[in-house]
Image 1: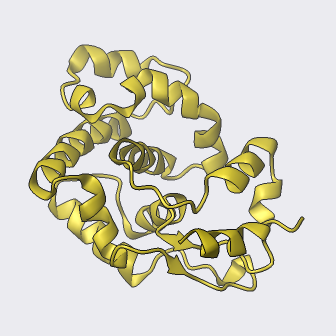
Image 2 (image 1 turned 90 degrees about the vertical axis):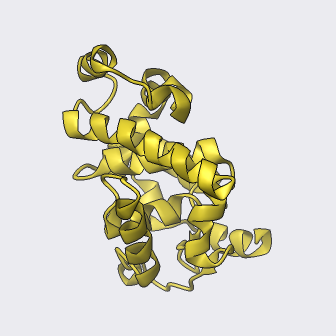
Length: 189
């Protein structure tokens, strides 16, 4: 069975590719989780974050934005000493401010999914890449998302991070056309 080339780097990446990457997500908690994880990835490989994902869930109260928004100095220090996550003070503080901004959007929009999916008009963009080298690192949609998120107070949400987020949560189908998941995700839309 043919797969995207990047998925063959490790067992965890292969499982993530086969079961999650590119599947449309509409659950606010899971959308928030991916936003935090993509921000944590900045300057690192996705494999690093993927391998720490369960540690992140435990450390960040299973991505309960209401709890994270209230984190104080003690919790920040606890996170900075947690060897199971990326111990970067800016990224940890960004998770807290992002939780606060996330809650504001939920209140204003009636849910985060309504806000975030507007950047693709509510449906997955179906790309048809022949080779991984054709896949962009950012698009007009990810640039618009980045600008809007920054205006709302989010951090670690540049256009490249936003595009990786769009790929992860199924806003775009960036499996190459020879990958078995490409056609499956077209059918799921």
